Length: 227
Image (cartoon, rainbow, N blue to C red; front, side, top):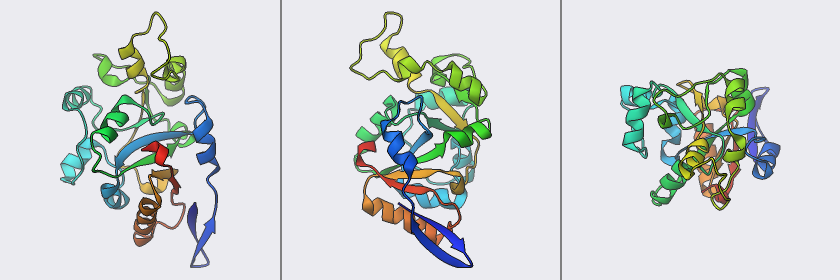
C-alpha cells in the first residue's frame, strides 16, 4: 500500500508493503500486533477532521454518526463510566462486529487499527472481559490487562468444544475483551485502516490527502475477509 511523506516540501509516494498486515492475518490473537475499531466509511472524513471520538464526545459535539450499538449495553457502559473511552477489540470476529456487519448490509465498513505497541507505550487500560458482564468490571493497566485475558478461551472458534468450566456466554464475553483509548484520537496515531475493496481504499486515500495527512499517515490495507 502507499504511504505519503513530505520531503523537501514535495509530496512523495512510495510503495511500502505493510509487513504487519501479512503477519496479522496468520498470527494467533494473543500474538497479534493490532487493535481494531469498527466504524462506517461515511464517517471517515469526520474522523480525520475531529479525531476518533468517544460516544459522549460525539453526543456533546452533536456530530452525526451511525448508531449500531445495543442500547442496553450502552446504558451499562454509561453506568460504569466507560462512555468517555473509545473501545478497541483484539480481533475482528467478536459477536458485536459480526452482528453489526450482518445487520447493516447497506453500509460500507472500515476498521481503524492501533498498534498494540502504541497502546502499551501509552498505558491504555484493558478490560479482560466485556465490561457489562460485571457490576463493576476490573480495569487494568495495559500489561496487567494483557496478562489477565484468558487467551485460551479468546482463541477458541465457534465450532471448538467448550471446556467444562466455560459457558458459551463466557466465551462470547471473553472474546469481547477491550482496550480503551482516550478521546479524541487523531488519525495520525492509527497504524492502519482496513477497507473492503480498492474503491474504498481510493476514497480513504483521497480524504487523507485532502486534509493534508501526509506525514505518518495510516497504512491502507484491502481485505474483503474482514467484512
